[in-house]
Image 1 (tube, chains in turn red, cyan):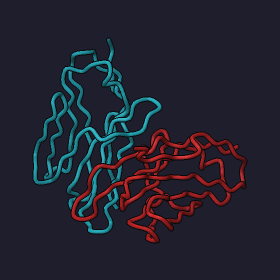
Image 2: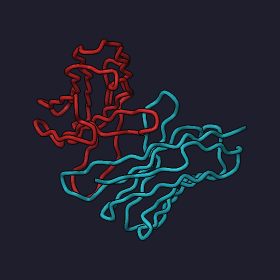
Image 3: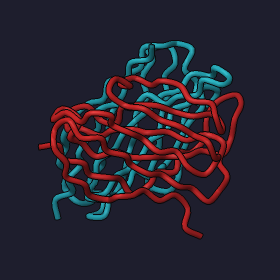
Length: 115
Length: 114
């Protein structure tokens, strides 16, 4: 049972390059999320998806693009990377939909450095 | 939108003593308050959560209390052990069907001193 996996785990890129972070989950969870983690800011939501082909912006969506053509995959693309996007990115999923929320299951994280 | 403030940002506690981390939230409609623990280099994991119809919840050495009137909730860890050293995040969520996003606090780095 692989659960939720992210790739790559580590990435170094240059300013202006396009970068895609992959997220794959094997549970068929409806909800998937992308967070970035920065010192002093905690976990901030970038984008989330309620189901395949349904995505919505979170708190800090500028400079990022997502898609969800299949339930199990939720890639995050930085179209033109900037140094301010240097961060640790966490993908997460959750099975339930409805009143209230349940446990988020996080991936291992992807550490991105933009030079 | 929801705003969650978390204090303190760092906390050092002697092994065996208790630790308390406090969070406040801004939206009175929020009704779900989880706590996540993140060990160094690892992913965040849920350790306990509470819903707004409950004032307190315990799980062994961990407890969470909620004061809806004051809009704050706290994590209490008793008899702390070295493995409790980690970063702890509180979070809050509104009961908006189809818009169930968690807003996290900025985290507390807890260090247990042997």
